[in-house]
Image (tube, rainbow, N blue to C red; front, side):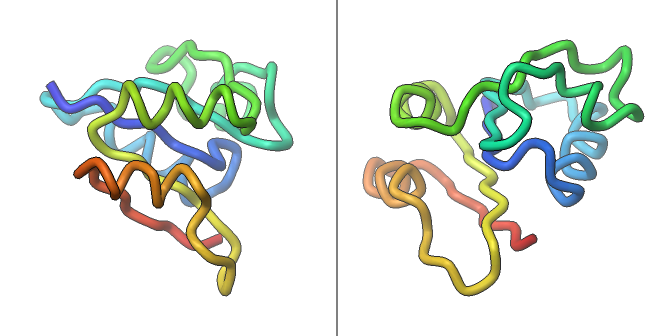
Length: 104
């Protein structure tokens, strides 16, 4: 089973990614994080996910990023175009973790 996490979970791009991953038989969500939607359920941000995911969105802070790096095989960060890769992406890539950047 491939465990993946998303950073920027409230973004449209990652909402679509989660919608596509619902039916993938070999993946499981490890963590969902976002700076603005922390504390809300993912289906509150993306109504199309009601009944598929019931996870709370975690804050995008150092503790969450450490959990993401530790618990995920793949990380999907949504970052603004032109910004450098966040620290957790560099950490994950440094330990052989796959990081796939999606731009907002």
